[in-house]
Image 1 (tube, rainbow, N blue to C red):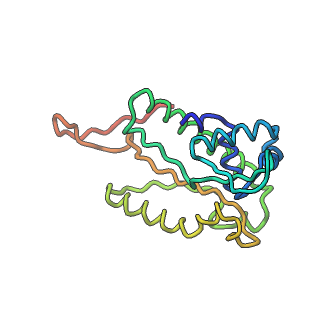
Image 2 (image 1 turned 45 degrees about the horizontal axis):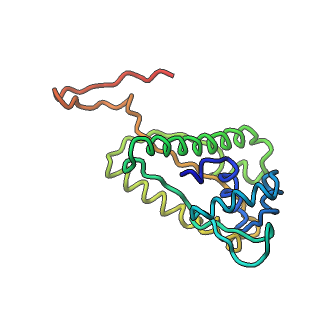
Image 3 (image 1 turned 60 degrees about the vertical axis):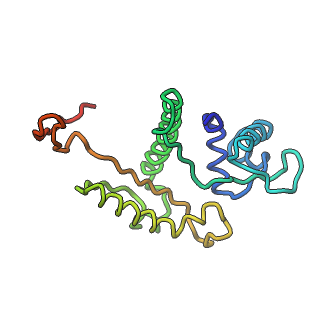
Length: 197
């Protein structure tokens, strides 16, 4: 987790996802950081198994690539202090993604015309009433659909020439403040009050 707790390292992992491979010099140009700083952070990511050298090159001209396509830290299996640190990293990533989404969506008028009227781009919000089994089934179907295109992230050579990077956020969470649920002690149905901002 320590390796992921730095904004330059997060930016490096994102840049490697889109480029496939980068040298420290190329990464510095993409991120606006010094080559020495990028080389240091790439070595740190490599130490913890997040990136690896692809071979060839010397010094800051050695190409690097990501080892993993995604990262998940199961907080339920950690001690309380480590779980708190893991949650802080998760919050950092979520804030970064939501800020990027908010910024990009607010600049919609600058998008290429063919992406303005596209079914995939833009924003929508729906509420569904589903059971836990239905939620599992729906989640598996959505993941299966999106996985048709997921290999293109770490394999730039598989991208069609006119492909555009599209970030899709799939956020699912129970609206507990709207749910009527039985009291575990009395069995009475409890309707929670609306959460305050």
